[in-house]
Image (cartoon, rainbow, N blue to C red):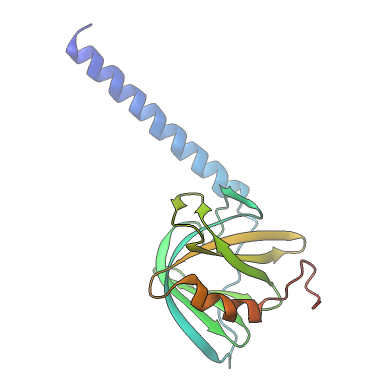
Length: 168
């Protein structure tokens, strides 16, 4: 086999792999197009904390390797986690602010693995929240300015603690 033929085969395989990745991502976008994250912070929400974060991904509940392409949470981004008296806002670079009301926030805990990120043990924050009736999702955040242990008590205070939204 000549060198030129080997290069052509390698390029063809690379193009096929890239094409399959594009087709797969477009299918995922189409599959998740009915789901959108709530946009905008309610008026008169009192800010109780701000933290720099890296937004990692939103996945199906308890399936940290099954990414959801929620608008505008489809891609990793740097941003800010803003805690208010009414819920949690994710203000990500280049995206509208997503607001998860306390009634939607089920729980917050620590995680180690999400779809494209593995960190030190318990280095991620996992927000479990209700995107629609009966549909729970997990959003993973990597705190940049403080450790998860400083943010979690405030998040736990905001969460309902139950999947059906009733206080226990």
